[in-house]
Image 1 (tube, rainbow, N blue to C red):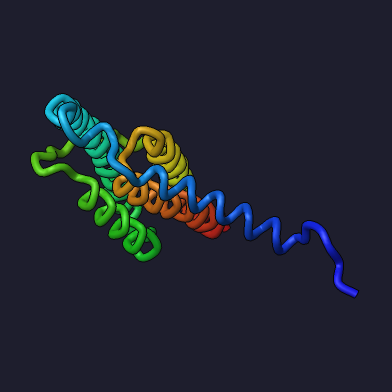
Image 2: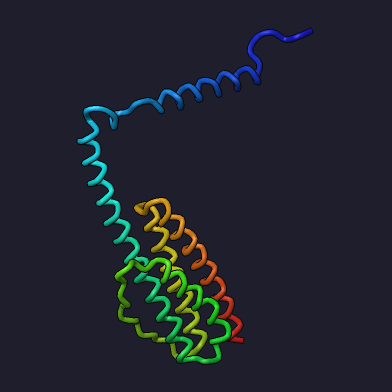
Length: 175
C-alpha cells in the first residue's frame, strides 16, 4: 500500500523548486539597466576606486608586517648562525609572502632590533612575531576583497605553522 500525503522527497523537491524560482527572479533587469545606468555607473566607479584604495592600504600594511618579520629572521640568523639550517626555509617562505603582498611601489621599513641574547630566546621572539603577523593578517580579512582575503588567510595559516615550528625548534635548541 502506498502512503499518501507529503513525503520527504516531495518536500525537498518543492523547496528546491521555490529556491530556483527565487534565484531566477533575481536575475532579471535590475536598476543598472535603463535610465538609472549613468547614476549607478558613477556610483560603481566611485566604489571601485574606494575598494582599490582599501586594497592598496591592506596590502601595504601586510607587506610591512612581512618585511619586518623577514628582518627578524635575518637578525636571528646573523646573531646565531647555528640556527640558519632550521630558519632558512621559514625565512624563504616569509620572503615569498612579503613579495606576494608588496604593492608596486613598496618600500622596505626600518627593521626592529632583536633583544635576544641566545638562540632559544631569538627563536621564541620569532615565534611571537609570527603569531602577531598571523593575527594581523587575520584581522585584515574582514576588509579585504576576496582574492586578497584568500592570500591573507593562506599567509596567516603559514604564519601559525611557522610559530609552532619555531616553538619546537626553540625547545630543541634549549636541550
